[in-house]
Length: 359
Image (tube, rainbow, N blue to C red; front, side, top):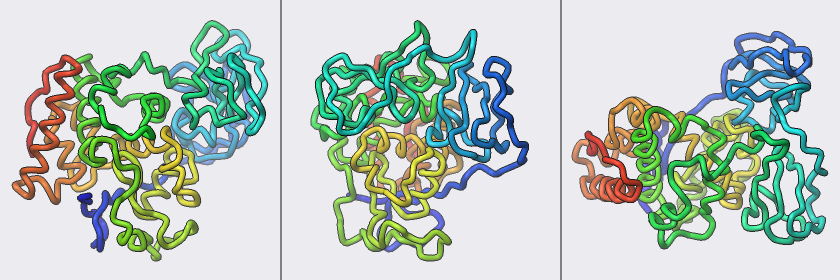
């Protein structure tokens, strides 16, 4: 499979080089665990101690499970958990915590480690609700929206039937439920601007993902000879998972130890220590793709998300993903392949593809 150049390194084998740092700490104002309904608004970059309660932009309340420098409560679920408050906000569920390895019959409802609730669609011996989406489904309780469980498939502009039509030969690993579960990491994705823009962004993301994975077929980089080359030993944290552990994985083929570190920090997942999560957990895989799409400009000048919501067009997303190889006449056949798939997806979604399709 073709791989793109890493912007900050002269890579021996090129797979998307993504560089991203953790949010800067702008203050260390220790937060008291205030009564939920009068908790202060969350502030990005502000320090929060364990137990701090904040009101997020979606109106829900969240409590810090681990101290952090203002990470996003919806994205960084290792640091934050949904919090119920008296008279408003959270849920009224009182279901037991999920236990790995414990038998669950159809209809059983559990509280997962991310604070969300899940119901067993099929009996199972304690499979993970986020990973084993055939056995579990998100569950909303208390007559309201569960802020710990925002991945509602009905909210995505691409239906499951359309997803299956777009990827008729996809690998079963890349589940629709995994994608919709990942949407909570970046709520603005395919959810910004007009309905037309929302569908265009979803189509642009899926078209590029299609190209990177051969139609959602490849989960990991196919050229295993490249695997030992993705450990940058100059990084202070090194390569704790091993010299050959940071090969390309997922829908946009995340690679290099520093990219796993950056994506993991942003998502609240230890991807540096356990990069295999990206090839074992569909939701995690999709989240890494969305991380790049929403936060990284790659060889371009803006993130693919900003390119679509600001009217720069599909061509600019190609530049942000692989512009150094494909754009400006570098590989017109590859560009045409992406554009062709984008046109097909927008047709399926019933939306005009817009202008500026090429780079």
